[in-house]
Length: 380
Image: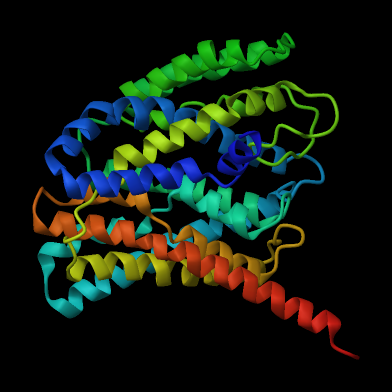
């Protein structure tokens, strides 16, 4: 049982199980599933997912330490450019399809294929790349930047309510100050950072009209760390544990349970909802993402920036394919873009079908490894 539990946790099978259960439930009993999803949506998406984004932030923080894959600004800038390309090209592909169909009523969905789902993209990357591979923090920074830009797009083009940036800043400033003061006093327990700084930060995001799931993103960098790189969810790292390590180890299993609930609460979509918008969204994500990521990575490097150490263009392309998994963020954008009806259902199916990017990325990763092995074994 312990071995089985280890496999389930390491392979994120709970996340997959939640997604499959949601699909089955939504198609077998749509009314009861809709009622369940509505009841748990806030608790799962806005509160529980805070800790997944916190662990993702931990990965980025450690990658920026001396010797990490994102240690220099020239290296960190490349995934930021890649994130911009991974949003621009899919948006252009979608709007081009709208123009070709002469269907201006579909134009509001242009931002849907801009999305990258951090949870599923990261879990897929872990299946492709070995621990400490620079493609993992590259993808994480790309995905976080993608979501940050997505929130800006959402606030500007799809306002669901009033965005209070001044209120957000006024509440976030003391939250960051609390985290800074705790670090300055060398507080080693992560709980004061989470409860005091994180609690006020969550309030800032929520009241300010931004997604509160990102509440711990500005707090985690203040957790004391000795500057080592550990794989996300790894509780077997050698050496003395610092506060950042202890935080990641404590939340390792609870976050997997959160991801199960996340999939269960968000993945339920009727399988019959397939139409032109479905293929526009899915195609723009699966094809446009890697093209945009690879193109802007090449442009950034040509401009004098530096790829993270050890990252090849093939790795960047595979990371771009992985980033094509839109899922939750794409579903959220679809809901904001279209009212309930056939078009919205088609858009949601497109977001769900972006899962095709996962096996494509895995196959591409194996192809690159096998090609590299063959070259190394070939006689000179």
